[in-house]
Image 1 (cartoon, rainbow, N blue to C red):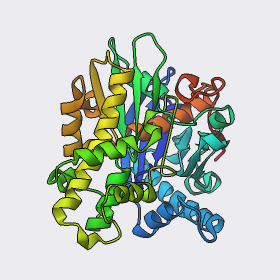
Image 2: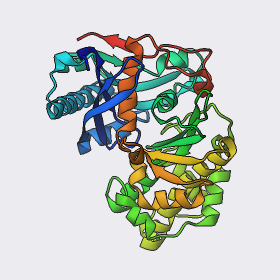
Image 3: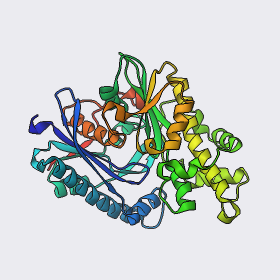
Image 4: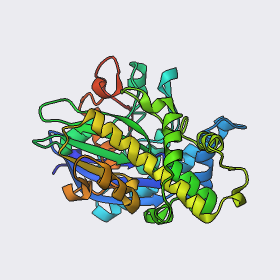
Amino acid sequence: MTATSLYIGLMSGTSLDGVDAVLASFDSHGRPTLLSRSSIDFPAALQAELLALNTSGLDELGRAALAANTLVELYAQAVEHTLALAKVSPTQISALGAHGQTVRHRPDLGYTLQLNAPALLAELTGISVIADFRSRDVAAGGQGAPLVPIFHAGIFSAPHTRVIVNLGGIANITVLRPQQSPFGFDTGPANVLMDMWCAQHTGRHFDQDGAWGAAGKPDVGLLSALLESEPWFARSAPKSTGRDLFNHDWLEKRLTQFGINVHDPESLTDTEKQNIQATLRRLTAETMTQCVRLYASDAREVLVCGGGARNKALMHDLQSMMPCPVRTTDSEGIGTQDVEALAFAWLAWAHQHGVAAGNPAVTGAAGQRILGAYWPA
């Protein structure tokens, strides 16, 4: 292991739960070895502000800049913790890859926006920073997302067809076939709608282990209405999405159309609230399963990563609905919470080594592109 082989990856996703950081060494082929990891929860105020910045509001430019600075201060803390665990100095790190926090994602309009302050991050950590990974792909006519399939191919490829499922705020899949380029796309909401409904009715930011929703029963009629009312589900890949589409207004509109009085929470019993949560969980499982059946009917197994892998009820749904066995990436030696952060460490490695990480087969871009921009230490 040499000093130039060490990279850090930082990820804060659509679920808005916090920052994941990993330290990894990479060999000359870009294969990683995870050395240490850490996570830091978002303070409630930052979480609320990042959520609010997903929609237009008063002084949003100034607020976004301040939120980005606060986010990067957390990034720097996560870097410090991760290095301390491995007893590694910042001067030994070649670069760190920092995704930033997506607050707008509109490739249909030619832009995607991640809050970040990479120059500040370079100053706080003393490490070169590579960030802004999505915009070049969007400039080339692509979706700018998902970025992880090519990384998945490097660590999860097998002699048979595999599907990698990432359950963050938004869900995406990667289809890996032997001797073929990886293929993937966003499938729709994973945790984003469940988190919103849970927060609204329990005060908790997410449904721990899926226990609250597991006490309810999916409403088949409501599930059909949610699926049939959203044209995005029927769109062909490449496609990507985010809170620009799947947000509070989206859910409120459809529940209201179904005859549920969302403006008077007291009109719903606890059981009815849990039934809606169970239906939102089933929506995630159903859209994911439909995509696997349509695009990867030859899959021999599904590997799940992301925060949703800890939702026991959701995992049970996937295991019972998928056409092949389902397990987590833990079984492959990479923790479910580490895959995306590790991917951004790899994206930093790829940028520095001139590897084109943009994949037209995934995003629909005009061609392969080297992704990211560089801020030296």
